[in-house]
Image 1 (cartoon, rainbow, N blue to C red):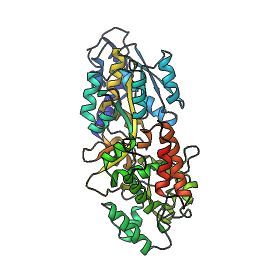
Image 2 (cartoon, rainbow, N blue to C red):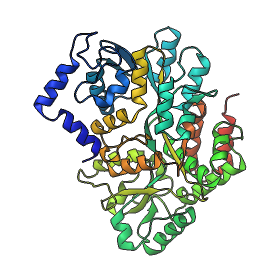
Image 3 (spheres, rainbow, N blue to C red):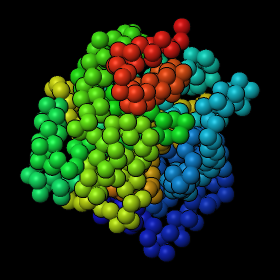
Image 4 (tube, rainbow, N blue to C red):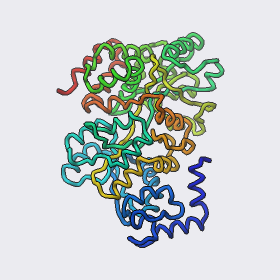
Length: 465
């Protein structure tokens, strides 16, 4: 049991302790009995971790409206993560999630009905909102900025920054630079985890030679109207590993053309795996089968011994139970994942996440925003989350995360040893990142005559003026 869990359990486990804490937090508004009474009041029993937020103002009886894209089971966990904060501060969090968030947030800002706080799913959208509505989003407060500096790497701070000003603090995160595999299959065959890109290709060749009835790789990119996005992740990861982070940054910002020779070379390197009939598509078909195989089923042949490796994010872990409910994820389990190695000494890490922004500067809004940027919230969230959720917050206790792959993700995301880069397609203009890029990569896999230069030139031609 982690120290954080022990501390929480000691505070609220016994009925007497819980009753005392509830009573102490339930004094009338403005009284000194509740934890959220006058700012600076003493924290109630079990609320010591929240004292720093209580001191930020008179929070008792206040309400903070949150607007987000996070729906479903994860929304339930999100709301549950605020319960201790609400209990201890007396501030109520009103949660609203929408699948139409990206369109509606601009409408709400224009109509004067912006929420108090919003969770922005991409840095590109954050930049557009700040630039389109320069007076709507509040720059991050000093308290929020201090938490970001304390718990997140410089790369994460930079993604929340627009025009040199910090606006968004990181919330949840994901890590995409993983290769899923069967530890038992590797051990039986005597294979080691590859440490470089050349090692990865050599391993693939060795599997071809040793196991002609299987394939080294399996993949799927079908996702309804979003078909192609897993293939864009593949290219993004390879651009980072072959061309480097500087070129990657120039590429998504269109400071170099989409079909720059370095990007062409990266797609050719991607094709060494995904378009190689000796390498793919284990248990699923030939190269063209990748385009019509559902993305969430792309790795399943590993469980049948028909394929050895599948590149996918940490959140892919929740899909294995679709095949067998008893699938164990871990270094000694049925499946686990290793870091996708690089062709250089740089250790790039591709991923994504949400950013918290404030539209109001009221004390209760600032206090809640500061809480969300802190280690306290990260640990609150980890305790109630499902497998697949992780944060780049370095103060998160990894023992609280629900899966070994989530713990590994947090380790990499929070480490200065790895250079984080946000998913490029989420940073590009919508018609490209969620349009021609998806389409071009799908055509590249389904049409064997399409060359890398042709595909990338098609995408380049779609870039808005």
